[in-house]
Length: 273
Ligand SMILES: Nc1ncnc2c1ncn2[C@@H]1O[C@H](COP(=O)(O)OP(=O)(O)OP(=O)(O)O)[C@@H](O)[C@H]1O
Ligand SMILES: [Mg+2]
Image (cartoon, rainbow, N blue to C red; front, side):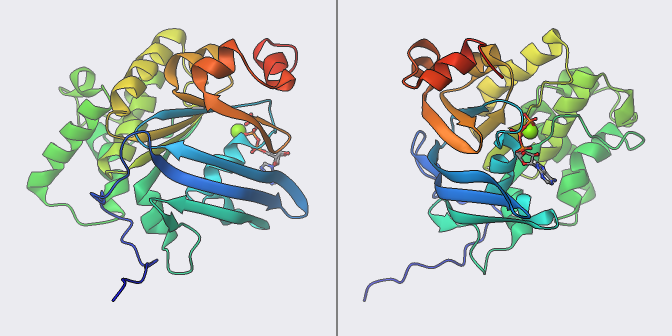
């Protein structure tokens, strides 16, 4: 008897049957999104590869943030906002009626533009904060989980002697890595990053870029950036959005050296945007 495909998927843990690196992690088909009557995504179709860095570029207001917020169903949390189309994660429709968005967001973590640690909470507690929402933590585990996440975010050496100090005492770049550690502690498969370096100086930015390089060995990363050089440096694939449409999507090298669409070329050479 043939097995019925099932939509009931435990989205919490690393599944083990993750697609091979380079194979699609997300398959987005004809994704549309609205704020009220305003249709801001007009049918986006793209596959996002597993354990690669995918950059989303395009002028302000073109729908970059909206698109990545559809990937973990944050878009629907805004009153009046909705989406249509299909988004498969590991082959499962994330908008399926039996999918718990909270579990989905554990698997698809997000790092925001402005570092947003809890400033008076300790560094260690900041790292554990996301995880605490999902389960009780044994005392013994806490130190180990915090250390692993801080090492993963390349922050451990800078904070290991002051884990009980407030998160707000860290520099902007350290705070952003603290937020990355907080996301990693939940053990997601995917990290969505919405302009994670825009509030950082060039040195802090370089550290995050180095970190991305290490993280993609384990995580699928989607990064929104206004910085063309950054997209070219860190990503394997690049998507160029314009007015809610996907103009071009392909290998980053190709997009930056020989874009196929005139509008992509104009944008990356700074003619508009
Ligand atoms: N909360 C909201 N309510 C209503 N409209 C919104 C909201 N957020 C975004 N929009 C609109 O949706 C469109 C896409 O916005 P989005 O934030 O996705 O753009 P973006 O590409 O991320 O821009 P930026 O580079 O400035 O961050 C814009 O026209 C914007 O005005
Ligand atoms: Mg945005």
